[in-house]
Length: 393
Ligand SMILES: *Cc1c(COP(=O)(O)O)cnc(C)c1O
Image 1: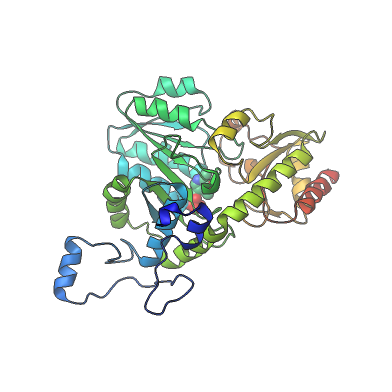
Image 2: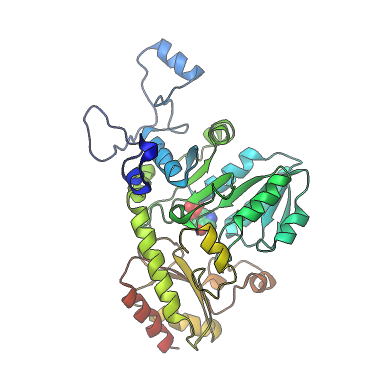
């Protein structure tokens, strides 16, 4: 019956279980383990545990299971596995699927820790990784080959918001027999159409929009039941990247409002980007919802909205960018995203500080670039805040 529900109904109710007390809010099962009614029952559960039969919180937990079912219902995948953080999800999905001798093709514009996993960790265990410009389909075509086991990419890159054509890359990858693994944080599960575009494995840092209020770390891997239960689960349950029941409960409450929050934040991001476009003090305003964004047409087709993150490139470089940041009254200087608070980040000196200068240039991370994760404040206050910052330059 719940399959017929709309997304918002599922986000409020899907997967809910109630104990004998009939609690309204989901219970937090803050327990490491479970008591068996008999020795025979314990034996049977270790042979095969049925639905809602748990053994140990590293393997699974009732609160975590509700979160997994609800996010899978939102994303449209058969199943999901919750992890301790977004990075536990990225490393778990890739490491559980790959073995020595496999080849991976990855987009080059990646979150720093994702890049570390692909460049430093996987290669240490005999996986070969080729990097491509994710927006150039010819580079994907040239890089995949019969031994390519997976392609990896962020559907919208951080911090310059390039949008990769998921349908085209999936077709190229599948023709070579490779799985498509996408870090979909910037697209958000609200706007994602990844499943219908052919993506096999979809990963979120739940720390971002799923919590949405900057409180807890979490992550999730979404995919087929076969992949999640036969490949991911055995790896995760023995390596220990489980999501805590308390954080699962935080994320579950985040899902209840995610559709409302992300749509409101994206509408504000669009309004802020439009208000700042053409300001002579800005060299660039980057937002996939602007018609001058290089992949605006792709974003329109592959997402239900353009996301909550935008970027501005202050013409006066680092000094001017810092003046703007230090003048902000509403937005805070930090490095999370997807939060209810608007967050301003200077990637060149913080999140992407360690990148060599030539790579910063190649990725468009200029000294004046400021990433803005647009929150839930009144958009008029946000526009006034950024303009006030620009006036201080
Ligand atoms: C934040 C982020 C991650 C890592 O998530 P954590 O929850 O911090 O581990 C991975 N990918 C992208 C695109 C992110 O923004």
